[in-house]
Length: 99
Image (cartoon, rainbow, N blue to C red; front, top):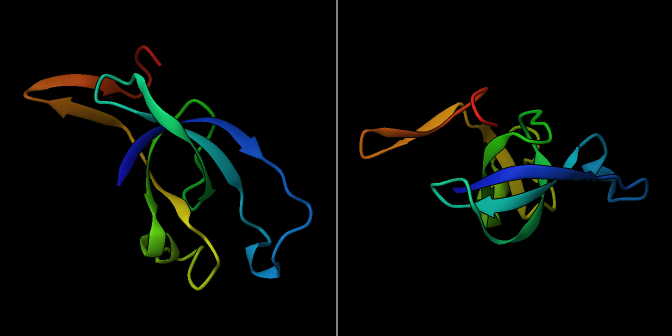
């Protein structure tokens, strides 16, 4: 799983039939301090995440193991919305505080 922030959406009116009904999000990878670290990825949304939220996403064959992405041509999926994270006893992020 990879930690990321939802920074946008992608709309596609023409797509593989099995992908109908899926929402696509633009994710920016972040480090444990919530600082952008890597590139961007487009991921199918399995948990109804929104712009500005921190999420966990998976890639590869793991991306096809959620209820919404089962047996679909998907290489990245948002599978969790992060409420908080803690490192060595210190909270680095709490949803609703300093978003």
